[in-house]
Amino acid sequence: MYSDNFLDTKLNERRQQNALRRLRLPEGKVDFCSNDYLGIVKNKLVALTGEELQLPGGSTGSRLLAGNYPLLEETEQLIAGFHKADAALIYNSGYDANVGVLSCVPQRGDTVLYDALAHASIRDGIRLSFARSFSFAHNNLAELETQLKQAAGNVFVVTESVFSMDGDVCPLIEIVKLCRQYHAHLIIDEAHATGVVGERGEGLVQQLHLQQQVFCRIHTFGKAVGCHGAVVLGSCKLREYLINFSRSLVYSTSLPPVSVAHIAKAYAIFPGLHAQRLHLRQLVEKFQHAHIAFDKFTSFTPIQVVMVPGNDEVKQLANRLQSANLDVRPILYPTVPKGMERLRIVLHAFNSFGELDLLIEILGVK
Image (cartoon, rainbow, N blue to C red; front, side, top):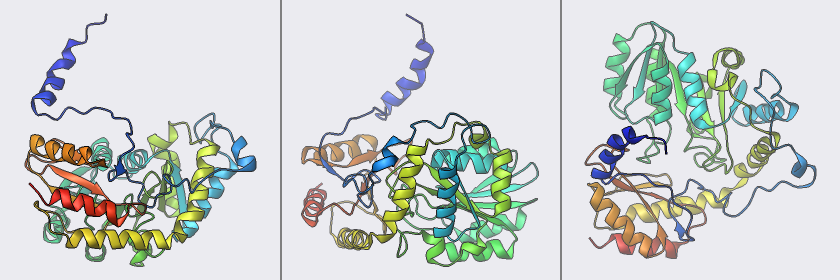
């Protein structure tokens, strides 16, 4: 057997922290952990029919070689129209999109300013860039402005509309004003807003009618949209630039036609899921007003956070909920800072008020 004992050092560190990650299979419990906010996957709202079922499961190459095809470009035009953008470019995942944009757009001598709670894919993309980068305290406009005053070169501000681990929303109107004042380019990840925020699930930027003042938007399809992939929205010039310089696009086999057909059908469905978004808002309001034995964050999105500091403690509470047939997962250090361990509770359009009552009841006792 090959000797790979050198891996033990880091694995043992995780074991000592009680933070070793393991894959789990679904167990039929009540879902309070997935990102299927609207229930598109659970309720099988997107299903291919007829000729769609015969679409290839592979695209045969990169988009610059054999992997471009009419359905892909037609779907990009559809999505650009829905999001009121000049152009759209589909990537294989949200991770690929963030890494692809941030690794190639900022150049040496430029400056990237990013929210301290930005997603790992944003951080990884910035690390691959040659630009200087600085984080600002979460949603802290004063610190962002201080950094904008000192920034050199082309300046990029990167944030998320809805933060995946806290469930809160960025102060977008104020950030846009600062970017305009200091001539910075705003890049915003709408992953957890897509399908949920806005009358038609169009996202925070469009809900606030700011799409003409944002340099780049990233929407992903693996959450509320219920499929796979992502899209970068911006100008036709940005699209052309990414086709030439974005390595995660240029050097990846493109999504297969069967996946793109799912994306197109999802975009035909989720804007009309008004009843689902209303039910979600009612669940969120109920949970926010509930009295529980732990601190919880203020969040008006499906992501609800209950603070239970300590890996051991939060895992014990998660196990109590699992024993009651509620699938709630703990978020452990080092995914979040030490002392900020939490339950990340995700509410869905298919969760009932009775299921939520049971969850609240268990959280009411320490």
